[in-house]
Amino acid sequence: MSFAENLDLIQQRIAAACARAGRDVNSVTLLAVSKSHPPETIRAAVACGQLDFGENKIQEAKAKIPLCPGKARWQFIGHLQSNKVRDAVQLFEMIQGVDSLAIAQEISKRAEQAAKTMPILIEVNVAGEASKFGYKPDQLLAEFNELNALPRIEIHGLMAIPPFTPVPEKARPYFKKLRELKVECEAILGAPLPHLSMGMSGDFEVAIEEGSTLVRVGTALFGERLSSFRRPTEGAE
Image (cartoon, rainbow, N blue to C red):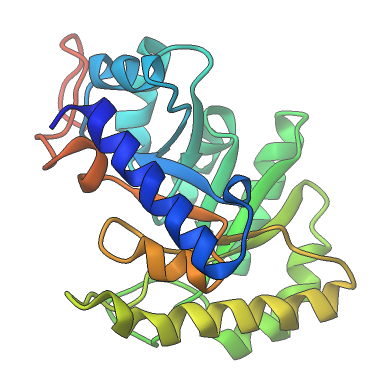
């Protein structure tokens, strides 16, 4: 199937999930996970009306984004190392996956230098998996005020990657847990947090039913990943 056909199918599935949950379809943003796909693929996606993209490697994004249409909007969705924060602040409209106070402090510092305010999502390790990054829920609640006090970041919500399962329904408890944690964070903040980033190609419909506002879909849109994109004039990452 072509990208346009895949996009149409995904949009239909998003609309059906929203209908089941009694939600407005416009309350869910489809973030196309474009890592390892080249600029020509992004150009084709933009031509189909897809404007929101997610990347998880800074070096790849630095090479690729300048070669893509200017109206594309980019979010960083991976684990961010402190030595890559300056580039991330310059390249992306939002940083998902902020998983520690130290990284949030570095983002605020680099955003101050860039004279901008950086929207972020805080990553939560909802299942306590040793192999994954992210705040433990109790630690997030304990540090939330300190995070929110940083002058150059805006906390827009939470994100999570639940344990992999071939059965989408098994991810539901983790999505529900993240939604409930957002409510607790909102109580501390005294204001709503607009975003829950949860759900990927295999489980985004269940995530929408549980309140996701950002679904991160790669394989179901683009097909299997290619080898990492590199601009021909550059060496390895």
